[in-house]
Each structure stands twice: as structure tokens, then as C-alpha cells.
Length: 324
Image (cartoon, rainbow, N blue to C red):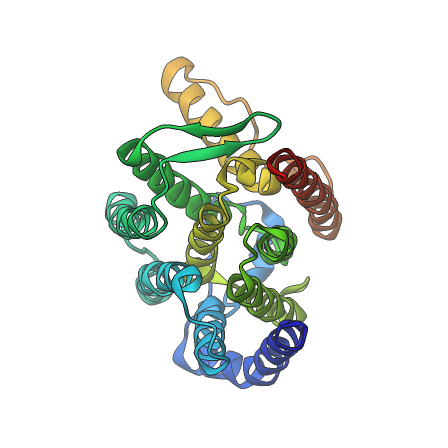
């Protein structure tokens, strides 16, 4: 098992690092460059034309390596399906954005996410017979199968959009995701019973993200795009659900909650009072306008993400201790 964990991590990292440079050249040749909106901070103008759709390579590498290492079972089918299903949506959105400067409408995007999320939630509920959630320091709380499905679908959609909203600065979403997946890697390994294949899948995703970060740290040579952010967020939520530790996902993914929350607060405030709460949302834009360097924002987000991941693992261990 330990060998496969290390093998998955290193293979994913190496394959992404080797393939990304020619892939970036291909994206340049195809004209899949990022369009910067006029309302974005002035510091983003230099990002115009940077290749996007980088997440598509990550998805392909993760799925191929998962199949190649033979880790497909009930615990990995749903995360891989979410990765591929939502990745298709994101890839189409990235393509349309690159070609015409406008992607899929928010309503169309939400509809597709909802279909994938409900399908994944129904599969998980029926296969694992989930009817409740594990509450830290309290124990299992039963809600029934249909409410479980509704909450699970909401978690998948929220995580998918939360990561997507966070993906606004070089290395921000990818680096934060690494810590979230590390937390669920540990949880899968220590779970009762342990979920070895799911843990290996987490290491493959972590390795692929680290390989991507090699080219995505400031100044980024490639962007993840919706193909990566939407799909990796959805897969993270599915992973959390399979481990039975979905209620600590908002803690482990606190950055995604804050980023998405800032947008919700801003929209509600503008619609109800006509006033802005923040100068720019997502809230990392507020920090940019406040004079923080892009690298400083990213590194501080990583620090918070690392702390949140550790807190989440501690909460998991506390609930595990109660059961034993």
C-alpha cells in the first residue's frame, strides 16, 4: 500500500511536469488564452493571453493513472466520475471563453452541476446506505436517505463553485486544494475501515496539483480554468462524503467557504441596499486593491489552508476516538 501511495504521488507529479510544457505550447497554438475582464484589478492586465484549460490535462492524468494503478473500486468510482463529468462542463466553458470571450451561462452551468451532483449523491447513498452525518464531538446524526442525498448534492455543488471562485490568482486554488486533499488522504488512511484506494487517488490528485503548480505559481504560465477548478472541487466533496466526514469539509476548505461567502454577501448587499460591502469580490481582490502583493495573498491563503487541514484532521481523530 505504502508503495502505491508514493508511486501515485510521484508518477502524477512527473507526468504532469513532463507533459505540461508541450501542452502549454499546444494551447498557445490553438489560441486558448485567458481573457481579462475590464473590471478586474489593473494588476491582472499582464495575464491576458495566458493559456487556460490547464485543468484538462490534470483530469486526464489522474484518470489514466487511477486506471493504470488499478485502484478503481466503489470508493473511487464516484470521485473519478465527478472529476470527468464536471470536467467536461468546465472544458466546454473554457473553450467558449477562449473562443468568444463568453462561456456557458450561470444557469446552464448550475443545471449540469446539479445533474452530476444528484447522480453522485444517489450512487453514494445507495451503495454505502448513508442516512446520516458524523458530527465532531457528538457522533452520528441520522437524517434519512433523501435529506442525505439533498445535503450531499448541495455539498458537491458548493465545493465545485467555491474552488472555482477561489481560482483567481496564480497558484491560489491549486495550492489550497493540495492541503485539502492531504487532509482527506490522512482521513481515508485512518478511517475505520481504512479506504486505501481512495487514499491513493488523493495522492495522485496531490501529485498532479503539485506538477501543475510548477507552472502555475506567479507569474503563471498556464491557468487551471473551469475544467480544473470545478471538477477538482466536486471531486473533493465526493471524497469527503465517502469518508463520512462531510461536515468538516467547510473547515478543511475554509478558504473556499470564505471566497464564495464574500461573493454571496456582496450580491445580497447590492440587491437589497444598493451598496457594496467589499471593494472587490471574491475577497482576494479586496486584498489586492488594499496593496497586498499577489504572492503574499497566495502564501497567506496557503498558510490558512494548511492550518484548516490540520484542524479538520484533529476533528476527525476526535470523532474516531469516540467510536473506539
